[in-house]
Image 1 (cartoon, rainbow, N blue to C red):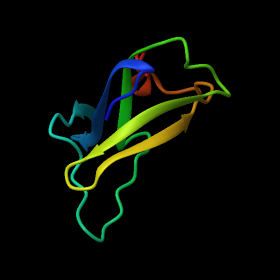
Image 2 (cartoon, rainbow, N blue to C red; image 1 turned 180 degrees about the vertical axis):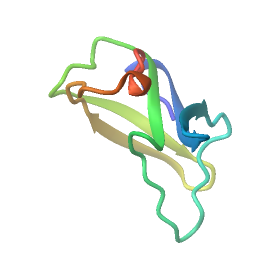
Image 3 (cartoon, one colour; image 1 turned 135 degrees about the vertical axis):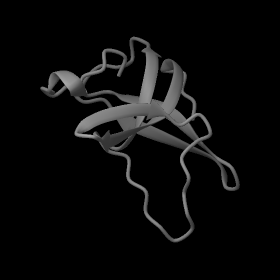
Image 4 (cartoon, helix red, strand yellow; image 1 turned 120 degrees about the vertical axis):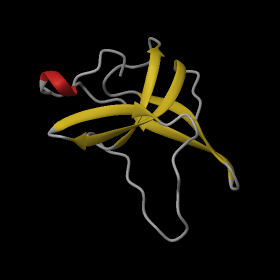
Length: 95
């Protein structure tokens, strides 16, 4: 994944282990098994825009490109929303 709206974009996963939520990057990408749905959502698989630029303003959109191993590239638009209140463990200053 890439976007001109940030220095880099990473795919991360949140796993719940021993009563703790642990986030880790997926440097090899997100597996997309044939015929199965994979959901991006808070508290699960999600995208991290590291070093976001000035374009991240609520109500605007940012462009990105999803890169698939076999299907090639897909241009997408993400709606920027205001940051919702989160628990201290859920907040990440570089989102």
